[in-house]
Image 1: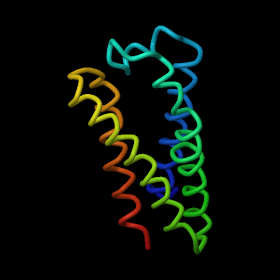
Image 2 (image 1 turned 180 degrees about the horizontal axis):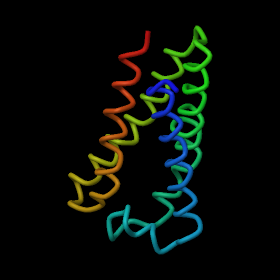
Image 3 (image 1 turned 90 degrees about the vertical axis):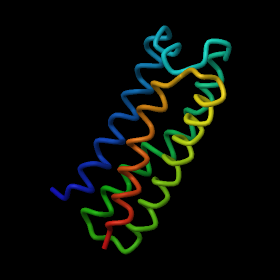
Image 4 (image 1 turned 135 degrees about the vertical axis):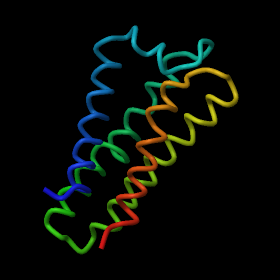
Length: 121
């Protein structure tokens, strides 16, 4: 299997698993939020994460495997979603000095998704 497609499939699976963790184990939410922030600040990202990270990653992988003409645009769409989320996490961690686990998870995802997008032919 194409490594780029495999990465995007994995990214989508891990994103979906992360949301399952947050929804099934409410205690886990504290790991990803500054102490003073309400849980809704985190939970409000569910729709954007599903569309821009999970679904776009899976769609991008499918398009890469099919060599679909729109694969580059779809993967860049996913990269933009992951990048926006990662930079939000980084900004939040810098401002509050907390929630570094979310930043540590998102920054490699952002870098890898941009590498996949840049390497597409």
